[in-house]
Length: 126
Length: 126
DNA sequence: GCTGTCACTTGCATTTTGCAAGTCACACGA
DNA sequence: TCGTGTGACTTGCAAAATGCAAGTGACAGC
Image 1 (cartoon, each protein chain N blue to C red):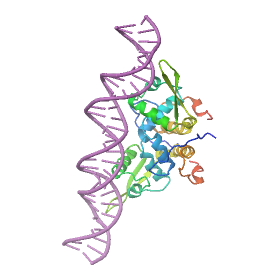
Image 2: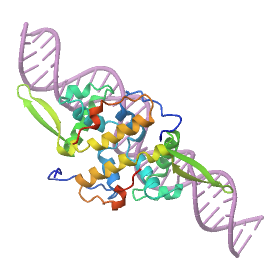
Image 3: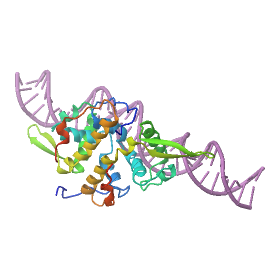
Image 4: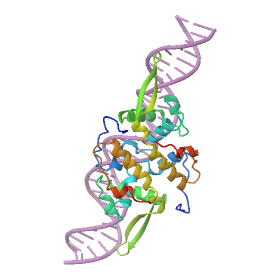
């Protein structure tokens, strides 16, 4: 069982799982942060800020806060003096892999010129 | 082969398929419209406007315009005098099914209280 | 002290959202 | 012919989110 202890609050919009998922990851940046953590092994703020899409730093800070509040990302200091943090996906975060895989499949099929991921991308069992 | 003739334009952000998919469906309403067309058999504006989440009508009109421009939805008049339209998913639109299925799976697992879809939801082959 | 780095925060103009009300074309019944 | 109703939107506008640039604070190292 991969579900975490405390669960996310139900959306006020409805009980529809799609509506609820969208309330968490339904915007143009959130899943890009998850992508960088999941596929590119980034862990530090600076690395996340340096994505190809150049997410504005205020939005990056905001998205990391929300992802942490949603239990998708964990933030912890990996050193003191000066304090430096690293961000890592929780199981709840890596469970987003299948969803992102389907996004890639759809985009590769319907948006010309999108990059194809390496074959192993489709082989990861979990 | 299920890909349509003309493809969507590449995003200016990057060639990443995830970023590109998000430019099309990365907001809180678009996939709810697709959901209603795909799972609930809605075809008319009025039906779409009556979703549980109560999408504002100006946003519904805007999203339908974008979905049409993206080749995900087709609009056609089903009668004249007065002209009345119906909206239907193209193959590009129904290809979003696997993505939405994964969304449902993730939400059911991580957001307490989200509704479980009927079992047949997971059985549709296409 | 001086410079640099990391991880953010702040200010502010622009864009998008959300809510309510309005419009337009027509059908229909009195 | 006039009033009422319906479907499919559009318009106005306040509030919130976005995007850009610049600023801040805690240190390390020279």
